[in-house]
Image 1 (cartoon, rainbow, N blue to C red):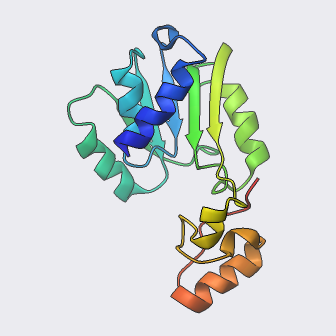
Image 2 (image 1 turned 90 degrees about the horizontal axis):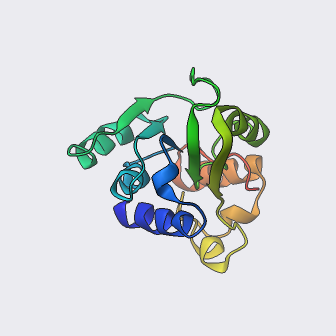
Length: 167
């Protein structure tokens, strides 16, 4: 997670001056790798928002020596002040939210004027993802719409499908 966060922040740093980021928000922060990278690269503050409490607990361990704000909550429902972040990131998250359109509207709302959004979306047609989806480990599931994909996963692994639609 830390290597992935570093790769993302390195890419972002090619396009914006991170020292101008007073407040960053990583939506779907998982283990906190991108939050850590934001702070390590000069962002004044960074917040991680994660839906799953177990991942938030792991992020707290990962970020024990960093002054990060970590919150458990749903980005579409969390009470975040308007115009409060200079940078909002979502890496491999948009396919999990209930509404990608609402997530985009919400991102625009919480960004300060002149702020930046970095949204990384998995390419569901990429051969490696078709061969073995990172979410489920199943062949070909990324090529299916949600309902058939959910049925496929349930038939093979007896578990719930956490992906909405790929965009």
